[in-house]
Length: 147
Image 1 (cartoon, rainbow, N blue to C red):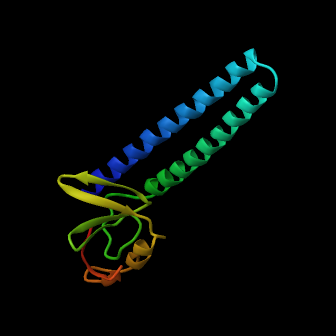
Image 2: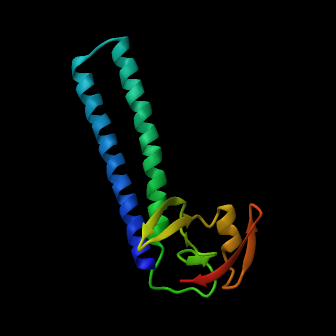
Image 3: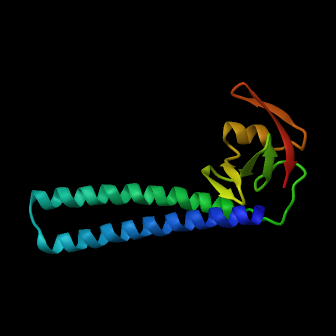
């Protein structure tokens, strides 16, 4: 199942990368076309706005590429005795994927929540084993299994 989870998250990130690259490319084209047919202050303002938007999109794209780099480090065939990057952790019936902060997904009627190792939950889990008990927001959790 870990392989399916990793593949789904790779696909989600690749789709996002494609969308952001298309948006950046579209802005670049718009700026080039606008430069050919406009002049004056209005033109300069439009170009500045496009440039700012392009910078925002480039920043978002970099964040997504950083998340993809984290996923690229994960080998789905490795089983961990202790929770580490790439572990799929079952705790109180929930499935947590230790990777990057990504949206939750559903695979075979199971909901998987991707958790960053730096998050409060991820940092509590890292390095612990099956049977580890912890508390988050006044709720008690026990690690039932590590895949």
